[in-house]
Image (tube, rainbow, N blue to C red; front, side):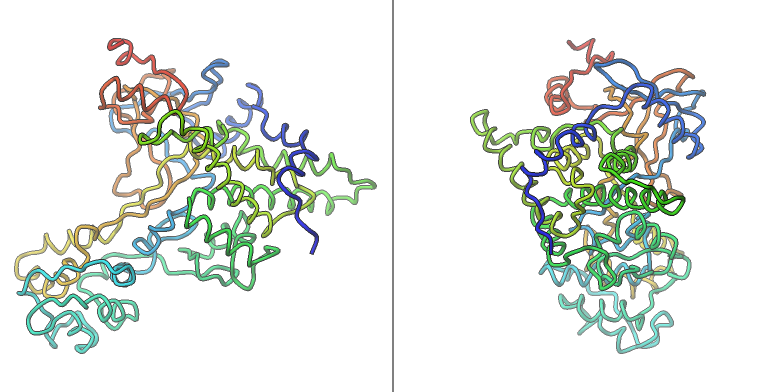
Length: 481
């Protein structure tokens, strides 16, 4: 196996290409890119414009909007569910829609609680499952929820198994439809999907290189597993950064393949591969970036004298992460993509531009439905559902949570008096960004969101915005200052 060059060697040998990857796009390049993107996604009500050198770009309304009207619904360019959230929310790894069934979702939650050693509720003594319940296929499985008239602390193991293997069916779950569980095309046990379409889209866009299954296209699965473990133990933002690297690399390789299939070039130079890399990188070139280790806010318990060590520790974390990723998927022809400078800017892009990925759990809707049933039906249903709800506790409705990068949303500037908010409606059941108007918006008006808690005091808002490197001059801040 050809040895993978170190970070310094890549930065030195490919300094020019690294600089081209990190150069800020021109206003005209930016305008053309977003015009095509908005047209492709059928977003006719907004436009991205370059404002000036200090602010950069912004998003403006091309029509009037009423209060609570949908302004923008956008697919992410790349995103990932938080690693610690995967056991509590079983979702499609591409569109982040909940998959399987209510029983599967609850069973996984119970199993997760048991594996983590979390205390399960033992309160309440009235509800229990009788052998005549019409909602349970197996009365023995049903009795896993009751013992001597009490809810037992060991409920999770038996109930979880019964729910996962479908021997225990809950009442009224046929009213809550889910997409089926589709396995990864490479055979890994880490990623699942809601459809063959999503499975293939993920495989083609990034997962074929990041799959740990037997069909993976990565060069060294041991390094890949170590990379994933390192990210889970340190910061799972590295997993999202890996998707950016993988996506760009796969796209560059496809561009090269397309060029060779259309005609066989008489010569193929380093400049040809650089052109392919820059073209594949363009969607990510548009995001505002700073080096990650220089972008993270200094924790409040650290003083100015600790800042250098703190930032060096972050840089070392990123360096270790990239070393493992290079071992798994490095491609010499596009070596500049594996520069520590590029990797640091990718992670910094997420630090500065990410929108929280949140998808509400249908488990919450299920228990609300049971609670709102007519009394007789409710009492009968709760003999089955109450032990489960008590066992799940306050976290029964944990949503899918993660981080994502949305190209248009990332262009939105901040205001402490924003005219939009991120808000998921009942019909928004996947990972798309949804932005609603908080007041009437006039055509030509700049669209803004708040990067921080706009209800905080001026002093607190000013301190929080220092992490973004600017002072807010909105009307609310101007009046206070």
